[in-house]
Image 1 (tube, rainbow, N blue to C red):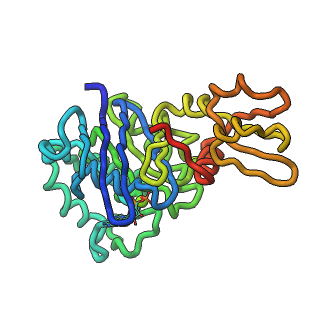
Image 2 (tube, rainbow, N blue to C red):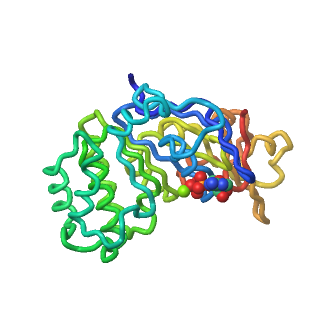
Image 3 (spheres, rainbow, N blue to C red):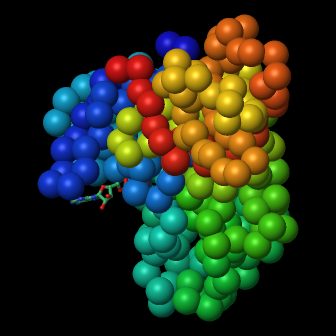
Length: 287
Ligand SMILES: Nc1ncnc2c1ncn2[C@@H]1O[C@H](COP(=O)(O)OP(=O)(O)O)[C@@H](O)[C@H]1O
Ligand SMILES: [Mg+2]
């Protein structure tokens, strides 16, 4: 068993949206950033992984086990953080532990106390009195207090200020440092990923645009810029998210195409953000 998550050809149809043949592998011991615009299908994919909604096709394995058949067993080893707090507003921090620990056979009050103290969470405050950053840390403390082997975090950094975001990223990096734990982390803030993700999956309108290592992603695509007169029809077809203006054109191409470019076209290494922006301007799928 080398993969914490293995998804093959996952499909889900809603009236106005469909997830199409989603496939991805998250190897044990790594962090995968799951990125895409709002409405791309990140939360839907996460809900399917957690068997909160029914899939229409495909296969999901967690730690090598089927996510539906072996749900109860798998859930013991998963910690989840959603972008909305799911605890009762009037609970105090210590009451959250009381309510949740019974669900997990390896719950450790010692760990919970350590995380809440590390995160400076006041035990006697009510959930509704906590700031957004504190609520996030509380959800994380809960998710990590049963030694979950897999953390699934849906937009954990949205709404956090840069300092709190940085703290969260440090906590996550530390969490996987024993090599036995993995994290799937959805976000639309790509600077988070530049820092800690080993793997990146980009989802666009329900389709996987890329899934693999971050380094391969940045090697696989290239930004090109040039004069309109150098933009041939055959080149146009290969460009993802072509933009043109008076001074020229810009776009993204697979790096394998660089060797066919006329020498006057400028090439540049993209950031994850730039890749996302070009994808949003015009997608192109291989399948
Ligand atoms: N229960 C549902 N019924 C119909 N459409 C839904 C349902 N849940 C989500 N959707 C649609 O699926 C699309 C993807 O949503 P979501 O997975 O939440 O995107 P993301 O998390 O990437 O922002 C959206 O267009 C959303 O409106
Ligand atoms: Mg979402």
